[in-house]
Amino acid sequence: MSQFMQDVGAERLRQIEKGYTPEHDDEHGPQGLVELVDSKLMWARNAIMLRKNKPDDPEAAKARTYLVEATAMLVAAGQALDRESEDDDE
Image (cartoon, rainbow, N blue to C red; front, top):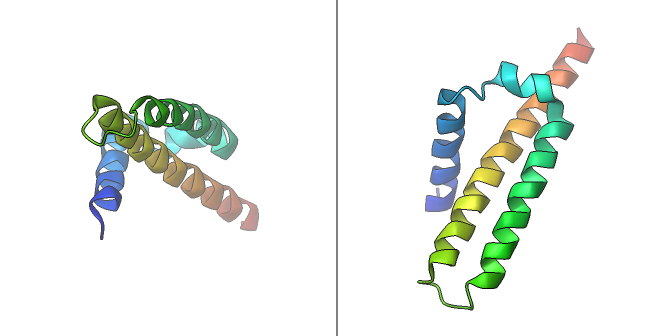
């Protein structure tokens, strides 16, 4: 597994430890979580544009962090969507 995917898994666990549990996520629903992902991706896009094609630029590190956070939130949104489907099946 790539370092990026390992970091996404660690970020999702960190989010849960901070209180962003499945129950909390369900309160916002998949749409609310995807809206958060969208804003985090905007920050990543801006950081990527600002890094000036220099991989060691601090903006490059920020961009990666934003992408890890957004991907972990997207995983949470997918899980919330799955839970909604499971509830509909009952």
